[in-house]
Image (cartoon, rainbow, N blue to C red; front, side, top):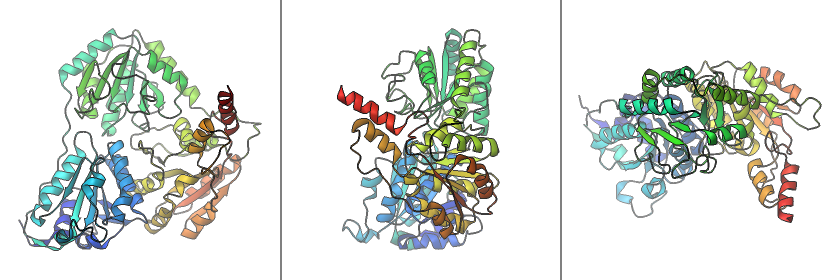
Length: 563
């Protein structure tokens, strides 16, 4: 039944109808009518006010990662929308469903470069699945329902909806839409049968999982199939929670700082089965593993978007299917005994177990906190449902290498390589999974892009533990700088605040750890803080990665330059 509502209230009703229970925002005058509409739903839809639009967009993107349903972010026009673009870009590269609701100038002011006016199609057209402007209040149910469907279907991604201020203020008698339904292609049984035939002829098969949307059942089915066939499985960049890392089939992750043995194993495979990933620059190690367009090994590529199949790599078998549908089909039909590759699979697992164990550093001369030992402590102390978040930077290499993810939905990290992601993502994790411990890792540079969200954690009373690795520089860029221009350092040193004191100023627990052996007790205190906590780790600037030092990197670069 229709009833007269303002556009803002009509839109708020649609968000609730489509299952939105959590929305992140920085309020703006351009969409006050929507906020007014959400007031009527404050018992059903929680509105969380972030301190920066980039954080709001990243937090909403994390909702999409955890649920498979579109996360919702609301920002004002112009500067607010531009700030939120980083979260839209991450949603695009990570194939995450996201709805960005963006306030806009009144329709009569468009095209005049009015106050804070933004050409939303020009700004977001290359990174969103679609950019929609609602110019008729009666079309709000239609256009919002279509946006949710598009964001959640096929290769998931972001949709931007522009909301002219006068449209939100107009009355409408338009009826509500029906709740959206996502569409995902089902695996063709003939493709599953062909895959089985290819497996039966293989000697060194290898599975690479990634993409999405996954869920607990889909992850269980892909793991069941891999275990039954003794297939070695690796995770693509920052998708390590798809397969339980404790299973014998798991062989590691193919990301930054990949295990060299794992890279060689993929190169030697005669059958590579890519379930879900787009096969981007990172997991293919710069489009060399394998090399396009036609890989040396037989490639089976499973993806829900037909435009991705054959776009960069020409697969021997391209399977247009959602990953969950494929996992169910493969587990039911494509189980093949590991008669030829049993030893191959055992070696892959053994390589991973050695690689993921922190090295013994007793008696080492290094200064500061050993990040490998920190991650080892977390691995031992956190339960299986703990959610680990991070942004971008060299500190993440330790997290990805030494932490073992046991369940789907426990890793929140940007495939887009966006700094500042981990802390906002932890907001989503803490709100959606209040019974699960949440840890957010950040480097000192990464944290300062989003550290103001400690105020949001305090306001929302979220017991999140933030760990800041402070080496007083932008280490990733410094590493590349030393490789290409040794000793010519510029722009990568940082003068930082006292992060622990800053946390206390926000009202959170804060403390500094300068020696590795201090960390376990600091973690215990942080987890008992009854609210957000921050642990600042003073780390050695020499330690660029678990295997590379600043001095050695510079020396090798100078040798190459001198020769």
